[in-house]
Length: 217
Length: 258
Ligand SMILES: Nc1ncnc2c1ncn2[C@@H]1O[C@H](COP(=O)(O)OP(=O)(O)OP(=O)(O)O)[C@@H](O)[C@H]1O
Ligand SMILES: [Mg+2]
Image 1: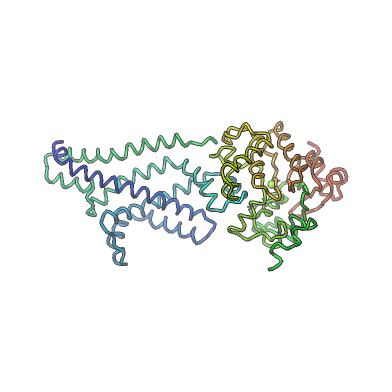
Image 2 (image 1 turned 45 degrees about the vertical axis):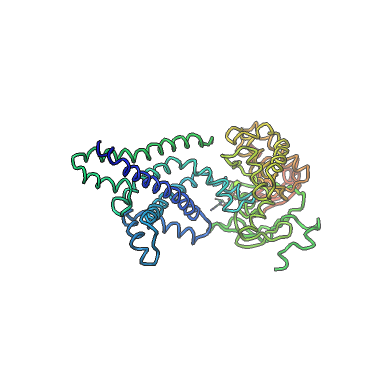
């Protein structure tokens, strides 16, 4: 454990990087994934097709490959990112939004079709009926699976440091281990603990949100 | 296309409020509405009756274009129903609809159910919408339920809330699709009473129901449908006591024996 204490400043900075990546990608992926879900249930066939194609492509591609595409593929079409950090957030958002889309879509399907019809019958547009009636109820039923996606996302950020030069917790682990070969176990335990500082409270928060927003049916 | 817009004649009381002209609709191979023509005058109350699967719900749903038709014209106040988009949403806001299964918004209170449309579609202020919403809840007799959510209400109370939600849009016409079929018997009358009083106040109504008491009390005309066709139209008294068609006789003998 000595190595963990000695390198506390580096660990703290790695922790903040991991946290920043997780939160940014979670916010973006949740918004983009919800939009994609709206595409997938929309009455406009091209939007539905786009949503379905996006989900199929992204969900069936390994995350590492998505990182490769964003960091090495996009510059070849003149799209470069300011930093590996930004590129990592983009890759994580692209990947995670496909899963958010599918979860939100299942939530949308759990809201009775009759309510969506009633919303249209009082003159709400398709967008308004999604925003006012369907999505608020859909989100309540998908809080637990969304929580799982967010937690998986936190752990997926490790690919950014492990393979792609983002100075996060995952990058720190092998460096510290190399410098302190006698304390490898303690170092990895410390790093794992740092991840749990993010994931465990997230899980608890999801449970609280779930209980607070439960709807009487 | 100049005929599609509201004309000077639209303001005339002589023109039907709702008019269906040569309407045909198919679900795949099933010809569910066959050459339907029906004119509904302002303030008229029509009861639509007929065996299960005869197309009554579909007819209702076509009038606010929850279903589209392949042939024929449907007009509201002289204006052809818009295809889609904002114009269609505006049209729907003028047509109130009450469903068999209430379809209240489960995550909103009763008052919020009633004010959502006026605020989002009509652009009313929250205070204005709530004032009118409470009046309407009072009118249907559930003002004390305003702050509850739908699941806390009985079926009869939920259906009355749904009627108030539709009325809040100040619709030109109200469609009711079997509004009492999902209710326990002791709750049917509280809903029918509200509908009778609406009819007395001059609301134009299309009501799919097998409640003969309501038809006798409130309807101007009974429309009998079978296999996608309008088979017979008559006053309630004539229809129930002296139906002309064999199919109407057969149908009435079935609903009268239980
Ligand atoms: N969305 C749909 N797709 C395919 N067929 C449908 C659809 N909706 C209704 N139908 C069919 O169209 C016919 C007419 O249905 P509709 O619901 O209008 O009848 P109804 O007179 O209201 O009957 P009920 O008294 O049972 O409510 C039925 O045979 C029904 O199965
Ligand atoms: Mg029906």
